[in-house]
Length: 148
Image 1: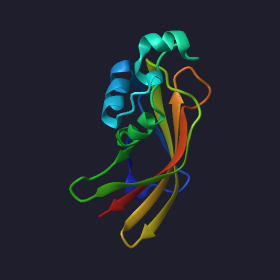
Image 2 (image 1 turned 90 degrees about the vertical axis):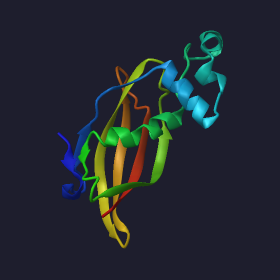
Image 3 (image 1 turned 120 degrees about the vertical axis):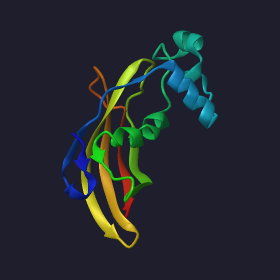
């Protein structure tokens, strides 16, 4: 169940999102949009022969770009009266590659919330889990500003 953003307390777990399948189509679309056509992402045949993973891997920033959509699974926001802006990312690390057809999900905890003149700044500790793998794909602190 989604939690009310204004009611969250520092240290509170928001929960875990649904699994998201990362297929070659999503990776290729991201490559097109970002103009990052490095072979490790888009050349299936070359990956089979030369990649240590034997399959294409997703761009690290793809899991970052998918975070806001995943985040909205966990919070309740009144879009008529509240606006939530991406404010930045701190300490972002990519620890394990997401391979084609992996499933990922986001585990989110509120680290802090700070009242600013422009709104309330939330710092969310976020980890991207990969199904059937111990090591997370990504860890980072996402900053979001609630403007009312």
